[in-house]
Amino acid sequence: MMSIRRWLLGWLIFGLAAACLIAGYGIFHSARHEAGELFDYELRTVALSMPANIATTSGAEQREHDFKGLADDRIAIDIWTPAGTLIYHSAKEPALPRVSEGFRTIEHAEYRWRVFGVQQPDRYIQVAQPYSVRDDLAARLALRTLWPLALLVPVTIALVLLIVARGLAPIGSLSGALANRSIDSLDPMIIDERVPVEIRPLVDALNDLLERLNVASKAQRTFVADAAHELRTPLTALKLQLQAAKRDALASTDARVIERLEGRVNRIIHLAQQLLSMAREDARHEKSMIPVSLRRIAEQSVSDLSLLAEAKQIDLGLDLLGPVVSQDGNDTYTVLGDEQALGILLNNLIDNAIRYTPAGGRVDVVLTRGGASGDFSLEVADTGPGIPDDELKRVFDRFYRGSSVKEQGSGLGLAIASSIAVRHRAVLSASNRAEGPGLIVKLIRLPAAPA
Image 1: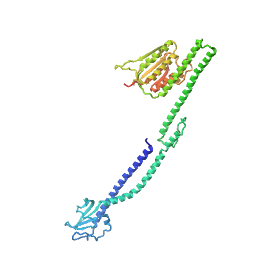
Image 2: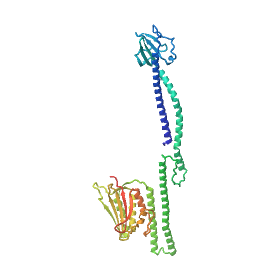
Image 3: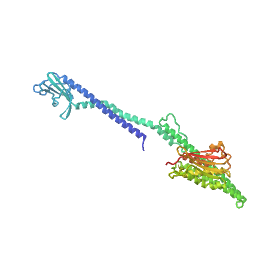
Image 4: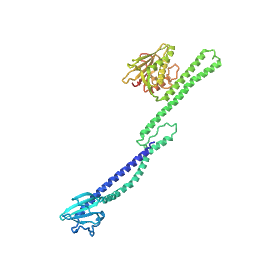
């Protein structure tokens, strides 16, 4: 598992170590360059300041001359006559071959030497020094420069540890506050000036999630309370009718009592089915969508509810606006959705329309494909009483029943249809007919299946 603390500390310390190495390398090379310039100046000064009385007749080594510490720098001095005869060589270093004037770098006796030669009227002077002397001095200069940096590294690491710990402290306090919360607490987190700007989007997103959870929890509690209330009413009525039938001993002789009991039982069964459908729809959320035929779903729903429509002498029909089969033989009404959920949606819309349409009325189901995106729309229009305009916005609320509604129902049919529409990213709307009494429920922007 990735740790922000370890990631920050690792990269910061690695970066600091790499920077120190680069700085040390640069300081050493800078010190070496400065030492080289210093020693080149020393070689030139020694060559130009050689006394004129240093001479031998046979090139023998001279040991009696004191050059005041120059031997510590391992300087080799050679002097030649104009004829090319070596007349002087310093005693402590090996004899070097003669090179041309100026500064030169040569290899001799497994050492690299820096050589400076100068031609004077009566002699040629050559002064040389091994590079090891220069490197030793450069290392000493670099160490003198780097020791404050070496002391600074552990101090910087300690500061990095402290700063990272202080910087991540708000995350720890936020985690602690969430861990200490009650399971029933969905109140938003309080943001004060101590919360860093970088963490505020996380806290805002968390508060938004808590708010949505709170709304969902309240809706669930309201749903349970309303469901209990809706179930209590028919169950109480059923119990009272059974008690009356038992008391009056009419259960076996009065057909009206049996009819009322059967109506109450059917209402409870319908309500239980609607509650189960709503619970299933709430639990599905993001079920995978597959290509399904909206035409076949509509035909099946119309066929299933045709007997109910015939019993009320209602003309129930299905209209398809457009060709049914494309040129390549595919169903032109193929949508991307959940077949079972779309069937429940259509059944609820058609069932509601039949319930509220008087005998001899008409219920039309219309499927349309239109728009640049090729999305589908579905329309269920009836010739019932319609809904008052001030109540149209609430018809999709759970357990809502209009003030003028006389038909039995649970108030869940349109709420279930609305939930299914939202899951399919479609829009469900209700409006009264303009040309006469009745209600039109439209499902628009139902996505078409990809080719």
